[in-house]
Image (tube, rainbow, N blue to C red):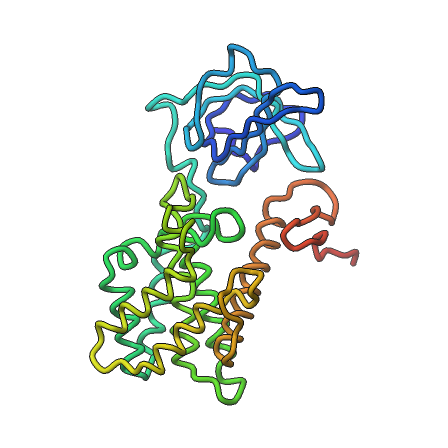
Length: 315
């Protein structure tokens, strides 16, 4: 199989990919064309169908498709000029080739994250974490395999546990460095800040927003999960419940970034900073990893609104 990260300008390819999105658009001269995003386990590539002829057979989003295409570049990024398309047939492809996955050991990441529960001193917080991670019918079985986003960062199998562990490690590092920080609250909320992604996003290969995700979002879902779980624990302090819920509600930091509240406790603010840092640094890491063009500058990141350069220099 010719993976997306192996494509080079000037090649003709015949290959299978997962169609992640399909849009029918109009060119400036009024001609209809298709704009596609195709995926395999190494990444995603833009594709265009300029000539809508009989060689372009019927297909839909999230179909596995076989294409014949010419590899070009546009704005310094690889793009496919597609000549032929048909749905892939059973046995022609291995679904594992189309599911991007962390290059780390998923079981080890999960075990490292769960080890943090043993360090929690507050009995109510420890019980809350145990009930969610070990007893919840969805979280207990699927957390380690889920993605952390549709396409922003950590949007691969194992992305949620990789991101959550990183944020938890950062928060644990920060906790003793400032006065007034309640470590148990901070570590707990780091572990749970994106747990709502389990219900917000569907499983691979789709990895797309569910109805619950579209209508409620992972911040609300995660907050409700804490509230519902705390209600099952006898004597769970209401004030502690509110402090935990606030961290989840405010972890995006600003109202314009989807947080219903801005951080108003020291733990909530540290959590927001840790989450924001890990997400954005991962974006840069993924961009550097995916770039195969010569030179130190790898291109413009629209989300970060800046050009990214490799930290290479002449000796």
